[in-house]
Length: 350
Image (cartoon, rainbow, N blue to C red; front, side, top):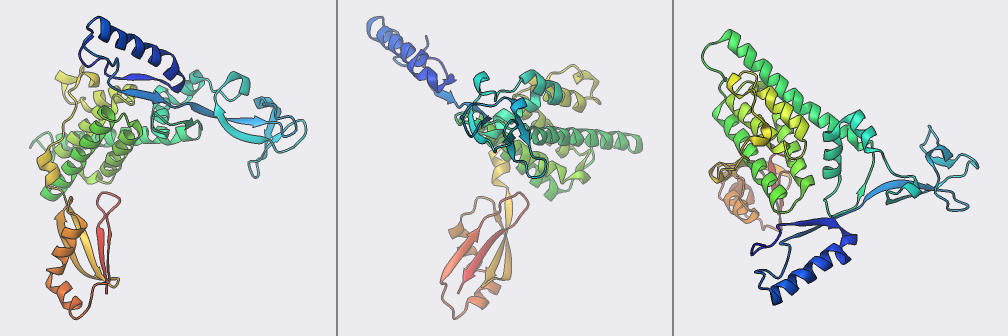
């Protein structure tokens, strides 16, 4: 055993008094008496939460009801006991055959695919939390994968169109501002996804960041066929690979259609993207400066500027200083942007 022991132990909370306790006891004994170089068997513990399913009980006996023993009112969705027409007792409980609240993974995979099922489990809740299973959420993950497929298909169409109309190069060019904004979005996603996967195992955060990046690409249809768009798609698909491996593999192959030498390449053999701190440092945002709710100035500042820096910079602007003259600042309200491309707001209350 190495000095650090096993990198990570993954198990349910019920294992804490079985496998985990025994392994720690044995390891400490070996460390004390047989010179094993570590007293702890695991560097990190991840106790995954339970998957919960919706259960239905008879209101009179609290007996768990089978699927064929309930009816659902189509008008308002009320669930009733078929035999008595009484409204049932509904709760979320650990999936169990005896509670009739389990699902067949084979049915889910046949209808939606394994990747969609994986994405739902990973995205619905952090791995250490309980997860309430709802098949309606599968549609959202399925639509997201379809949107990524749409990005790849449209990009390939733009490349094909450019190849037939111009011989100036494989990719079209993008404007400097657009290219910088897209590169910043890509490197921001790389940094956050890498941290979520490798440091905290926050798979839901990683998927959310990939969704942000795909949404950003969806709003840049005019950049289809450009090198920056191609680089962004490549990073997106490579980071998608551990989360939706089958779709990522096919998406990666689709991106290589115009590169014969790479048609047999596998996305799972590609190096993991790395972020560039210099690109992240070049990120800029717009800050709208208001005085008593009226816009007086718009600032373009580094994205990591804090509220105090923005306040000082705003007060240096001539138009702001003119409207602040003779007044006392009672309060300063800073509202950061919540989505890429949106401006932040700095409001002086006088």
